[in-house]
Image 1: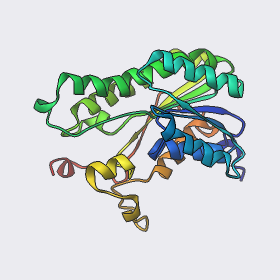
Image 2: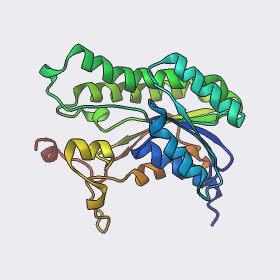
Image 3: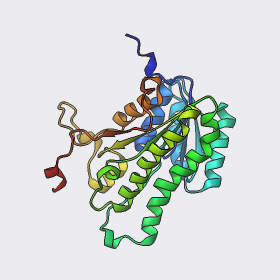
Amino acid sequence: MSTDQFSVDGDVAIITGSSSGIGKSIAERFADDGVDVVVCSREQGNVDPVAETINESDSPGRALAVECDVTDREAVDALVEATVEEFGGLDILVNNAGASFMAQFDDISPNGWKTIMDINVNGTYHCTHAAAEHLKDGGGSVINLASVAGQRGSPLMSPYGAAKAAVINLTTTLAYEWADDDVRVNAIAPGFVATPGVESQMGVSADNIDREEVARRIGTVEEIADVTQFLASPASSYLVGETITAQGVPQIEEDLDV
């Protein structure tokens, strides 16, 4: 059986928020499959090592590191321009840059609310809007990282949940608008994933994850990278405007009350 339909070899991708965690894993997975990747972060020093590791490995894909704050439209425009200048085009945009914190709604300041909205919602808008012309030139794929918090809400994460709900809605809406331009727009809604951010907030490490049983409550960054590659590849050609939930064992009502 051929598995060529799962390949994204030869494409060019931007992965935002790729200095660590899910974004870094996606960049490495794409590069391993022959994708030239642009990795970005708000600080150049955080993303340079990701590109260096890829470029010094045996991966057929090359990497370019760019400093970019996704809430700054001029910086985003420069990111897209650098991508096209370096690699000649853009086929895949992964809107992974995000931020969250845990707090009671009553304790969230206007600035705290605005910060989460700016990064998760406005950042997704800026990157997608800036990349539109190049993605439509020959067809492309947009993959937004949402969250199960945006599907059903999550205690202590009201701004994050609201922001990711907006990302899910934008995914569906834009999928309709861009389908005739040969651009597929989809999203992934992960549950808990063992990223450095989750470890710092909740103390859960990837080192403690057991994959011997199906009853899984937390995922790995590699598992989200698997889904991302699927959505970027021809294998998912019939998926348009979908949000794939990747949360392990489905949550039931009793779990939500805990």
